Image 1: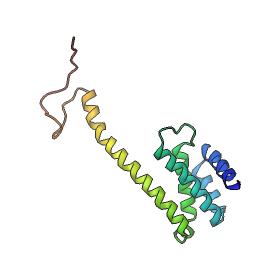
Image 2: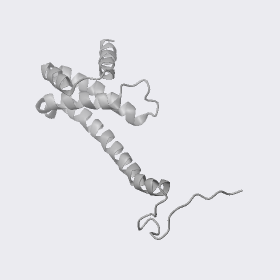
Image 3: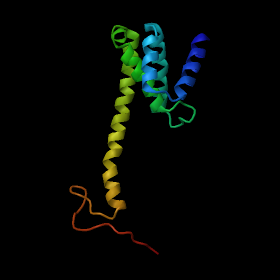
Image 4: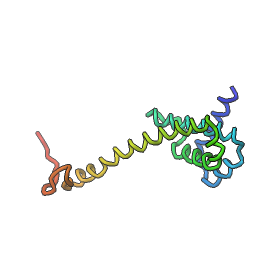
Length: 139
């Protein structure tokens, strides 16, 4: 179908890295309906990144987020008046919130892991501060 061909073409474009200013300028030239179509395609890419560990065939997430940002910035008013665009924005917001929560969970481990790997004491409440970790070999 035409929709599938358009989605494939836009996805191929997202695959390429673009300057943010170029994306902003491009987004401003789109009609509201074209911008909404592209927003839907980009949201699908972001959702697939969040839902699937096999992202090798997807455009880089950073590229998709750049496109999403440009389209949202350029068509903020028309999207705020469109139920379909609001639904897509809600879907994207849900995925972004989930990814932020996941990243925050991982970030809490980063400090602990750096202490353990550096042989440093863990700060309270994670451990004692008067001893450091050492590597022990067991036979």
